[in-house]
Length: 198
Image (tube, rainbow, N blue to C red; front, side, top):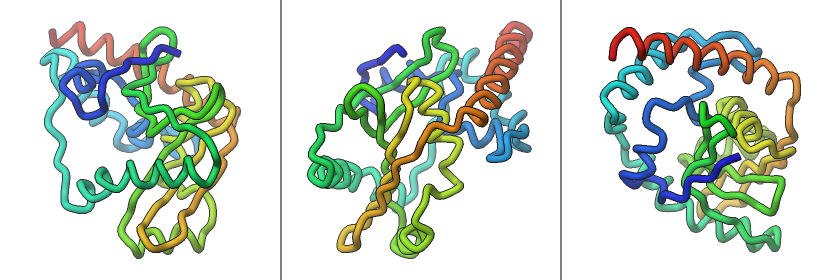
């Protein structure tokens, strides 16, 4: 694993991610069942365009997304307190060939990471009642373990005034192999398209 120590959201971070498949969007590449996503081609073409342009388009952030970003540091501190650990913030993690990556909300020790979500109150209550990793983040969390090689990953949902949901997610070797195979094909297609349009 290669760590790029650029602050998340900074111009350097956007440049490092430009044209690169990353875990937060692996759901656009592969489904929870391990099949190609219906959004795959749109994601592929978007990344090819980014590679040629040398820049990623600005992403829209609504009020809820901005609120989540602001609460992330508070959630991280709570996680550190609850578990008695230090969470290391990093910009971007790349797999060894730099073909894909992830931007974790923190790394813990030598073998785990952290994904934090700060959803709206009704969504957080739903997560608390379900008690497990929400399906919407399965590919992202497993993808982060593929990138880093880690054996487990913490998922945390946080809403001020309510108890947090903290789930220790284990590595799913079967899914990770499917994801790796899909990523290898995807990156080969991305390079081919880049060659045709650049």
